[in-house]
Structures are given as C-alpha cells and as structure tokens.
Amino acid sequence: MNKVDPQTIEQLQTASKKYDEAINNNDAVAVAALFTEDAVFVTDTGPVYGRKAIEKAHAEFFQQWHCSNHTSVADQYSPHVIGTSGQEIWWNGEWSQTLQGKSGDPIQVKGYWSAIKVREGDSWKDRMMTWNVTPAPPSEAR
Image 1 (tube, helix red, strand yellow):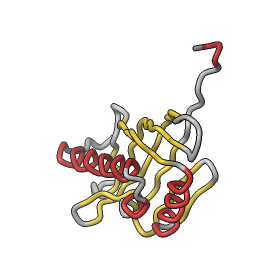
Image 2 (cartoon, helix red, strand yellow; image 1 turned 90 degrees about the vertical axis):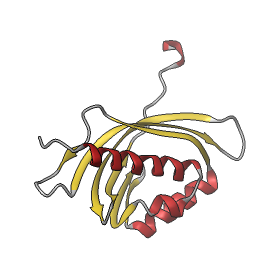
Image 3 (tube, one colour; image 1 turned 120 degrees about the vertical axis):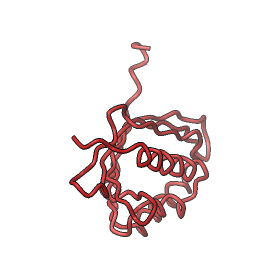
C-alpha cells in the first residue's frame, strides 16, 4: 500500500474540518462545494448523483433537521493512495452529530463513512462518499 505524505494528510484533515463546519452551519452550498461536479453521495435512501443534486439533498435535509456537533475522525489506517499518481485517495472513519427536529428532543447519531477523494487544483474533493448510521444498543443492554 502506498504511503501518504504528511502534507497530503494535513490537507485531507483540513478538508474534513471544512465538511464538519459546513454540516454544523447547515450550509448546503458549502457542503456541495466539497464534492466534484460528477460526485456520488451514497445515502441510506440511495445514491445522489452530481454536485447540484448533493446540494439539493442537503438543503432539503437542513429544512427538516438542524445539525450541530458534527465531527468526523479518520480511521487510524487511513488514508490510502489509489494508483500511482498520488491524485486520488480513499479513506474512512467515524462520524457523530446532534440532530434537532422542529419538535422533540435532540437526537445523537453516529456511524461510519468512507470516501474517495481527488485532487482538484490545490484542494481535495469528494468524488464518492458513503455513510451509515449505527443503531443505538437496545435499552436493556445499556
């Protein structure tokens, strides 16, 4: 497996922080800007194709839910270079956040994510991202 240089890791961590900030600001435009034009965002309801559709999907989600405390942490073994050019990587990790609906108590959710990122100019953008939500343990197991 190709080793990723420390500068690239720092750039990826910066991109991850931008994603967290965009989600915490409930900013669909900022979220979508972190994806390539031809990106695929795989959700629990199916894939969303293209940056404009990703923006629309997030805008619709943010109308229903207010997100806060979104954090994402890369797996200790990530990232991994794809191919030999060093212009594509895959990585994965964990995420968590608080969701607040129009009524009711806030909900804590968490799960895992994976992404393929490509270098566009001096930044890294998601070409493909997928995530899941891990269920809470049954109340009797807590």
